[in-house]
Length: 365
Image (tube, rainbow, N blue to C red; front, top):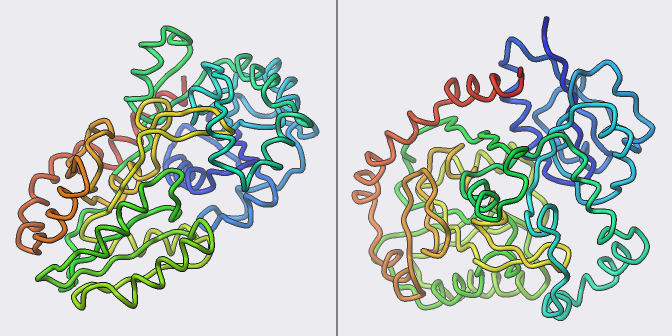
């Protein structure tokens, strides 16, 4: 008999939900259904309607026919999950360890660095009381993290090691060297200085004078009008061998994947320090960048700062602006073609069937 699992996503991470679908639909021992909010539903493109139900709240939804539950994101509305945690085995994915498990306090510097979201975050803490209620997550039977580095952080902290496991969802869907004659460099995710060093990238582009033609795609929504203006200005003033494409709004997952599939490399200028709901987080330690999944799923080499923990994947790293400039200044198709031979063993290690089979064993337990 198949194990029946309900997946819940009421907040965000719609792309991760679609990754779940692509895996579980091939699992012979798992029966599944996705329960989502209206706003999540509007961002989904890969999950067929028959596997989806739009719900208003978790508290008023009947999950009695399911053997277990996977909560894809839990950062708000904790009271809605009390009954579910008490009645069902729940695996809750944890995306921000300091906020969700270590319960770090708000950092004042984050309040001043995010003035545009002051009213929104104040509502979360004063009206929704997320600061107090976030400890409800501890009532989940199990926690899941999406990277080995996050699991290592939990082990070092010495908390919740007995109920946390690595949920390895990243697999390599395709491995193909782009046939484009212009070098395609894609920066995935929102064009925001909150989580990426976008200013560094803009400075590099401004001064870059490559001999080879480079096409940069900023594959995400600009953070604000200022960033959008900077992009437009770069398009008009950068070197003649550089061309730029950018977007103005959220990009559906299928289009997002098509653009990345044509890339030669992914530019991932991840900042080491970031925050979530005014709580300090550290990329690669307490928080995972979606750029990891983008590289692995699409079989691409990523360009990361050396401060980001080494993934189990073949990437390039830079220590500062000078190194990144030199890397992009001298990049060639010939070098890239040779480098992709080094990536081949990793694509085999994270082949779809291998990742799917190992994950199915965990889910079926």
